[in-house]
Length: 267
Image (cartoon, rainbow, N blue to C red; front, side, top):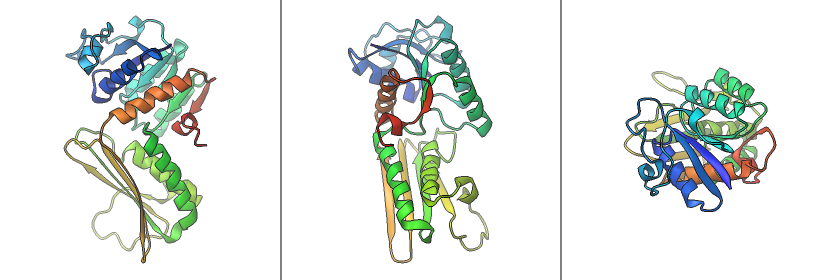
């Protein structure tokens, strides 16, 4: 039985994660759930809060009050994820990280904190998205830089980072297929007199509106044709199920830094 702790458990993704763990009856058990201090939901039964029925796990604001666990699942914010990583590393927990928006320095600190822990970190835990990342890299190898490359993404109006972690992952896959570094070819904004497109660039476009769960598209455009690789998420549960699948897989792994391609056997 995998014993799971979920941080940020009253948020959109947190509630989905609670439900996803609760649905794995006999495989995983939710033993702890936390939220930031001052949350209006503190003291609630997290199962009832998530619509999964009473689970007997009270939402708290302190990880030190959580019973022994095996894996911590974190979909919060970069600064909070560093704090949660310190707890996981200090208590021998594996960690599944779905938090995005880390700076390079924060990522380096995260890797240092968790250097002796088993970790799965991914920009997106959807099985479909991770298959799309593989297809994008393959397409980039075949099509080369003769095709202009653009990445479009859309999310709900409450998302705070842009481009999304998934869009950046698509860009990295595309760049890898071309044998270049994304940092050298990415164009994140266009305004005013920008001049003609520079060959080999990878452009990004971002939309934030309404309650869009997540839409991502990689486009390869030539004068004669356009190839598109799309992924549309219609329910956040697809991310939660993938993260819980990663947590279950992580229970059998030694210390290391893994991605969803490892979990899904796509490497």
